[in-house]
Length: 398
Image: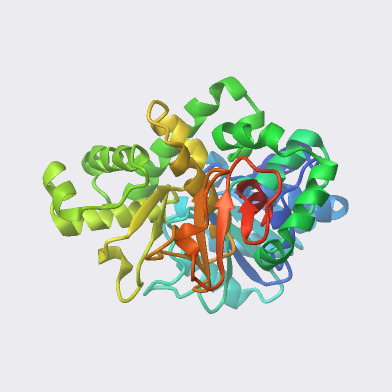
């Protein structure tokens, strides 16, 4: 325990709170069991350490942060750790990377049931399954999903200015007014293209020259470590999944032809659909479904996008399609707090209510003519008009 506390205090001392993600305010920290899922590299660890520093700096001994992939934890069980921590007066236990611990779900259930006075926060891969046959945590844990930086957060980091976020309905109703407020404070066009290429993962600030290499490492860790660990994928099949990811990255966007793709990749249809599903689960792609009934793992998605635009510039830097970049940005920024679906006539259906057609500044309203609650989202404009809205403005949703 002494070694764990020493490591924990050192991490708290080193973490900066100069910039804190707005996601910290979305979490109900009063809950007894909180899970934060998210793709590798989006900042889950930093968020935990910042929360501890901001809230328990005067009583650090009442809280404890432990990374379950650290060597200092190798000889302990979660239950033993919690028991000893509570005996020492501990009240707030923060467990990072729980997917690295084999029996995490069952032991968290036991801790929750045995220590009513203890609050536990845990983080894990996007692949983390809260609902399972051995230990159903879905009734005990409040689960949150964390994404990378929004365009708004990127602007805050770059300028040091506090910028308000806006819900979708506010943007749809008052986008001209909101765009004016933002443009009076900051000129988003100066930063938009940089964000699309190098601004989604918080570590972009650390070593900009190595950013693409870091993203490649993130992708490899997801495919070569997390998928085999959490989905039992044979490591020998990972090159096939990488091949599929490359095909998606070079498409405009990717509209799966399962029969043709199965033949091209020498793969059974069911296996291919499973691989597509895994890429979405691990946080590397976003899928649009026509209708989601039954087992989505075996359903063909209508469209597939990379999860964020930064991935596009790493995986297909020589085949960048502007239209695909625009749609990927829109899908990514909307996916944090909204439901995305396929629409027969436009690019996106959001929350089963709003239809969106994405394009450049000269995009006409032809494809939304006659549709209710339909909007054109246009790139390269500072201000919109009526139901034509600037693309960059959707980066202020979170």
